[in-house]
Length: 361
Image 1: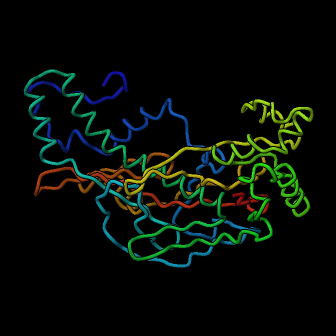
Image 2 (image 1 turned 90 degrees about the vertical axis):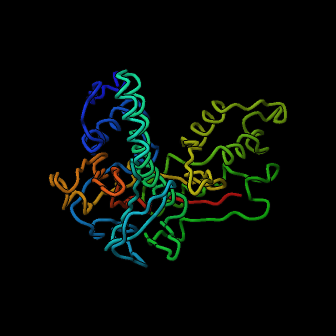
Image 3 (image 1 turned 120 degrees about the vertical axis):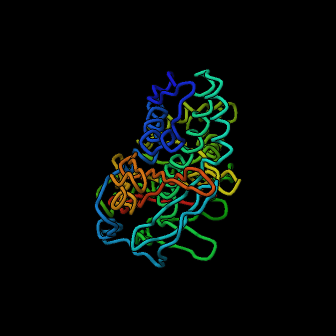
């Protein structure tokens, strides 16, 4: 595929098997080419990826540098075949995410037809469709990274569920750095709420306790609109005619930067789970953060990387994004290629004490 700078070369009448065509290194190359011009998730800026050997949570820090506590665990199971972004299991300490899919006999028959036809564009099209399916697994792993990072920023914990178990990671978030507004203080009470005073109070509390004043915040568009339509805020911006002001995003951004020295990132990106579209960061939550990385997204060594990398007779493995293992292996009955993506991943949160989480509506 020229536009993706792929190295896959197929020719009319080729006798290459599907096991030669659909391999972990080729899928990895295809994925990297697709990602060259795409923007990374917001959480990757705040929690850059970092590799560590093994699974040890002693390196995953929460409040005051203490280790994260895992409240449940499960062991060896086979990768599920499924379409959704899922949390499958926990192995040892760090969570082990693993999903797979098949290149089926029908896919191979379609490939046979276009190879016999001899037209490269058709061959590229079928291979592209197969590889697009495979890369959805890596995209799902990236979305899983972002989901847990945004959970941390909106709740101070990470929770993930299988059909039978709930896994709960306790980062020891300071309860004094959380608040749930009530009554007329709720930001959806546009006439009475005073969000500027709230934000100042939360900034002061973090600064008093840590010496660091948060200058950034995260919220969704819905929460941002509470600020856009707040009566007290409009009156402060235009005392002589608050009701006549036509607010814009840039006006509000400039006002908040001048008034509070704070920059708000409005984050409305979504993912799909079980056929349901969900926000990575929830509505009605406003999180203040310092202007620096908050921790790292640690990737441990997967069993595939540890035991199968280089073992081409058993399977082929390629590592992308610093720790996501793409693995392809042969299935002979029925004849197909089994592809799975696995990762062992958990964010650290060294700056957790400099973060304030408010439920505002």
